Length: 493
Image 1 (cartoon, helix red, strand yellow):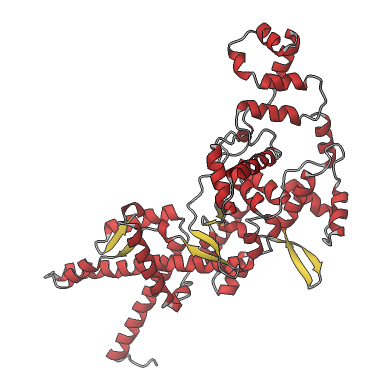
Image 2 (cartoon, helix red, strand yellow):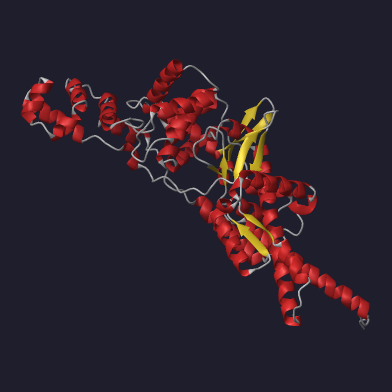
């Protein structure tokens, strides 16, 4: 027989139930804000502020001044540093198992999708695998991000020189100009042929020079590249006379140029409309990479304290008071969830950075990527794996000297194999294997391409024990043809 509840115990039970409901709502709202990319977040905040009189929303365009924004950021950081429970309190409350399972299935589906590469991504992979870390590589990454959609380097030379001057920390203009010319030549040596050209004439000339087929007509073709503008005004006879060749030789050279690609960049996926990078990667005095949130990207979302005070002293009906109480409770919950979002996001990003310091130092070179799963971060932070998945999805990191932001998801990689070192067995990520394979094949002799077994033997010499079928699997994933197909392709160039 159950004991009867006393009035005081009933009140305590009701209060506890209200606290549990509030905590659950707070946890759900925090998760809802955490998974939203910045544009969706700002839209959601604006909508909620329009419906609740106790909320103030200001976009970054509406902020009074830079000084006022910085003061708000400092105040917010100070408040959050004094709230150690902000990272974990109530974060995983009452999430239905079915919902968690659905989210994880969705995340696996998204992770398995491989979007076509953009020109910038294609060039960055080559630069990171072929050049050692340093100013030269940093500047090449900058140049790769400065190309237009056709693959041309249309940025004025003085802007490029000034960008390199900032990377190097100064220098004379003459020396910087020479360095720039060398860097452009290095960029133009990458695939696709013709990339990095500063004009149509240069783009076609690069392709003429790169043609491995010996031809006595090469000199005539290069001359014609310098006279492209005359194709619209001069007759074949006039151009043949100007080029000191026969009309048939001119027509053959013109027909050859028509087979070349005037816009090598258009063969790649269009540039992605990436979300604004919310996380900034910086190094402290010891060289450790730190994750900070770019609060300048965030809107102001706070309580309307003046209206709250005014309402408390206003003469309202019982119904109006109840409505105002609901508005106030919701406003406080939303502001709490908003401030918690960035704190939690940076907390998760820092845990990822701590495990991928080499990857950050390499400016995002996949070769330096260590095996890391979302479950590893979830276990370390005592979060649910679905929370980590939603936190990193659609979030981007700004790295120094890299023109495009890097998805936070790019910091995760599967373990492909074990590598014996002097410190014992270490895991090698699948991205490292792919990057190594791509670099090896990029440097092979096209006439005598490497077989899968030859690649295996080379990696064995480097201490990487990997099976031939694994190399074949990664080659297929990268879209690299077989040895026979690569050899046949080289004979038809």
